[in-house]
Length: 462
Ligand code: UDP
Image 1 (cartoon, rainbow, N blue to C red):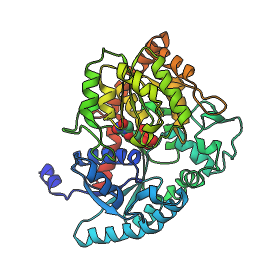
Image 2: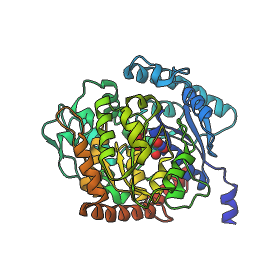
Image 3: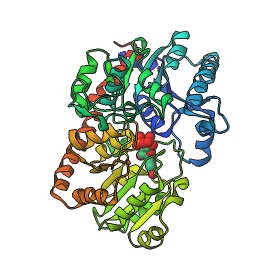
């Protein structure tokens, strides 16, 4: 009887609102799939531009309904804005009006909305939710230690420019070069810098705070945060098939802005011996200068390993011609985009040379692949420290005084992972974290419990 009553209750409905970029959409979509599996209806909001770009490239769909709003750049998206500042300002002005219109429309069509879970970078979404009397939850897509650093800057507890070291509770001392790049250098990116600190401007009014990490991975920092907020730690937000396998058919994120040549990658990997391939990617934004591109190319060329390198189409002209004509045909494959999770899962892959974006970080942790961290900017520098020193799943390669990673340094790091004693240690650690990531998402695991608790709160069961 109680069960019947439960079934008759209407499903709660949550709007999910990621910041409009690949690395922010992926975690929110995955969170949505978990909610859906627990009886919560979810609608993903993204921009008209991204929705149009995605549908024209992507054949995958998810069962999550997607609704567009305008960011003021329907034709060209972020790339068509004059500057980051102008994009952020317009997104706020046009986006908040457009979100109001969408909520009005959904409600007039009879769709009740129980919560809006918005990207912590879109603080204004909480104002819109409050206007409608809807509860809001801020979703942080970056690691808890990075969030804690930004919180300390926001509160004036870390002052800029940073000195030689900083510290935050529950984490070892962080040297200047390991802090997020916005702390090292405010000037080039004032819009982004302000945005990451302002994530905390109205945090106390949010009913929920979510973080895409898992308890074991950042235990001490999470414990400290939980003294302030009722933090729900719900990651890693990786398609279920790669971790706990509890969600049927959850094989990929299902919202890709790039087209992967999957069979080409897979056939090439199938041909390579076990653990013989270095996989290299700098994410969906990474742009290496021509000199850096050459250094990476020649490091790969000098290494004994095979390599699969993702170089986005607009970056490929920077590749050295000799490398393309001589080295690549012998032992390499260059692709504009791949299905990264499938690559990381492939038995031929031994090492991931990564820019340490937080999604790539969680993916490599969840699949147990050791890394060479080659961070470029934003939180990547701190993620690289975690991967190397805190989680022990890889090494970091240092840049020189001109911020170039030299081929010999990269080569030596690749060798350490592929051949050296360090390789054995990091591989063991990587396997340990992979198992812990699975456990977090398994039934009754730490992330599963936090998601369940959110669902019970939505259903007014607690
Ligand atoms: N990715 C992918 N194929 C590629 C390169 C990247 O599917 O060839 C995915 C990767 O799995 C991750 C996302 O793109 O989910 C990149 O996010 P991340 O946070 O690592 O970096 P960002 O692109 O935000 O800098």
